[in-house]
Each structure stands twice: as C-alpha cells, then as structure tokens.
Image (cartoon, rainbow, N blue to C red; front, side, top):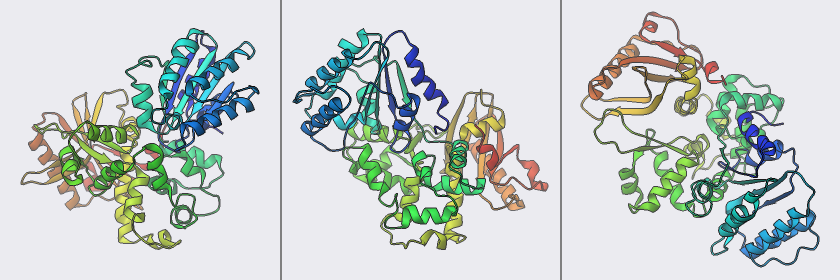
Length: 468
C-alpha cells in the first residue's frame, strides 16, 4: 500500500496520457521508496524492466540484461557484447509489442555505468534518436546514487541536456506520513513513541517498514540496530557504499560534521579533514547535500558569507553517537532510557526533527505562503549566544525558534526567560536588524501558561509537526 507520494504518483501516471513519449528520472537516497513508488504507480505493469547490480563488470551486467530480455519476451536475444547491442535489442523488443503505451523502467541506473562501458552515450542515443521520436514510450530511470543521477542525468551537459520531461526527487517522510505508515501496518504507537522512532530512523520508509507490532520502540531499536543479526546492524556501511562509488572521503566529511552540532565552514572541513581545496571537494559537499545528509546555510548578520555545512541525517547522527566504534549488547538501548545521556540526546534529536519540519512550523505560524530563509546562528563576540533555528520572513519579522523536548508541558523559568531576552538582544545588536524579532517555543507537550509565558509570541507543539 502506497502511503503519501500523491504528487509524485500523479506525475508518473499522467505520463501515460501524454501525446508524446516521456522521459522521467526518479532519484533519492537508499531505502526512501523510489522503486516501490514506480511499481505502485504503474501497477507493476512494465513493457520492460531491468535493475542494475552493484559492482559488476559490464560483461556481467550485459549477461543479466540479455536474460531480462529473454525472460520478458524476446526469446531469440543474441549474446550482448556492448551497451549499443543491448539498447538495439531493447528497441527490437519494443517494436514487436502491440500498439499502446510502453513503460520502460531501468532501476539502479548508476550501477550500469561502469568505467569505459559506454553506457551513458548509448542511453542518450536510445532516447534522443529513437524513443523521443515516438509517441508510445514512457522511459523511467531511477537510482539511489543521488550524486550520479544529478550529475549524469538531471544536470547532464551533453546529449541529455534538457531532455527530461520530469524529475522526481523523493525525500524522506515527515512525521505525519510516518504515522500513516505505522497505522497501515497495525502499529499502536503514541505520537511521543513515533517521535522517538523518527529521532533514530528519520523519515526513511524502509526503516519504518521493519518495525513489528506488539513491542516498544526501544525494543525495536535494540533488535534492529544493536543486535548482531538485526536488519540494520550493518546499515551504515551499506548506505554510503550504495550512494558513492568511493565512499571514504564522504564518510570523512560526515565524521567531522558529526562532532559539531551547528556545523562547520568549508575552511574548517578542509583544515581538519586534510582535503585539497578543489572542485572534487566541492562535489563531495554538493553530493551530500543532494542526498539530504547535510544542509548549508549562511550566518545572518556577518560580513563573511561563507556557507556553514551541518549534518542533519537522523540515522547517521545516531550511528556516530551510539554505534560507531562502541560495543553494546542487544539490550543496550533499553538500559539508556532515562539516563542523562539519553535525555541530552532527546533534546538534540528533537531539534533536528524540527529542522526537517519547517513547513509544518510555518503552517502553524500562518506563514506558509510567505518567502522565508532558515538559519542557525551564533555570536562569537564577548556576549555569547546560539540560536538553532531562525526563520527570516519577508513580512518583516524574524522568528527565533527555541526547541525543547520535555515529558510534560515545558515551564519557562524566570532565569530562562531572562536568557531568552538576552539572546534576542545579542542577536539584534550583532546583526543590526531593524525587523521585529519574535520568540517562538517549539515543544513536545506545549508551554505552561505561567507569568513568563507572555514573553513568547507563539507556541508550537509536537502535534503541529504531524500536520500535512
């Protein structure tokens, strides 16, 4: 059962009604549901489909391609020695099919593009010289290696430049869709429990599909991540290896960013990581951002506009906090519950959840249609201050979002109220902004309406983050 993805499904199904052939690329990180979306959208009905296999030679890929052609109807397919042969046989196969739309689905496209294989040029020829000149082909390509898909297909500067009819970037689910997915699987979970799962797994549908009924989230985290035979015990290595053909420099950047909550500048990463300052390093940062592992932002109010790169992927951050180079038993996570380390993690992880739900925060503030920029901010002067989320609005207001994880309603103390006012004043002084600066509280259970509550301009709760 397909949860959400209504807009993406409509793009795919509408291609069947178009007068001319359509070329569609679907991309996104591993486990986000790309293949499932495509299969569901076309009701598992394809004229031809083929999935590239990881780290095979071109010869072995072509053996598999020939087998797929034979199994799907072209019984007399000869031995294939080049990708030119493969696409020539594919055209012969499609020409022999009855009149009507023919959906061709090539999955895990990046794995087919081995060095010196000539795959990409033959793909270009297949579309430009044959499929695009017809009216009956819906050509869908897909891949988990987001960086390859963006460089080679989406932003291709050669024969595929501006040839795509549609591109679909599949993002992880927000909380609301994770709730729907859990309900569809019969999981009886409170929103607080759903939040705990999200703080570990993020919105990756495959991770959520592994959760079982009748057990707590803590038990499932132990089973999936900390048990030696858990389905996600080795996920970290598989995740980055599937996305990048040489994952080591990417992991090095991730390791550095995992140490610093607010992120690092390019110069800091270069210095600490021992990288060369060149285009290759720029590509690494772009690739990680395209995949949704990091985000970049500039520091408002500072003359130097260098980007700061921040790690925001929930699973990766959890891995470095609790799994990497540590030895834990199968019941490790249950023993962590309620400890100071666990409570600190909850606070930091909730802040990251909020960063993934800025649209929901804007909706609750009534500013969905207003142009905004989002930042983190810190003062390095004598008066220190740090703000994890600023929403700079085009209507003349800046929202300072304070995010607090709490078991019950959060009570703003006198001291904390003073700290909020100090933080706002430091921000105003350093940036020199003339805009109105509002303080917004984002909490799990709401804010106690005590005397200090009047200092804030708006409050947002966990329930608001579940809105679609």
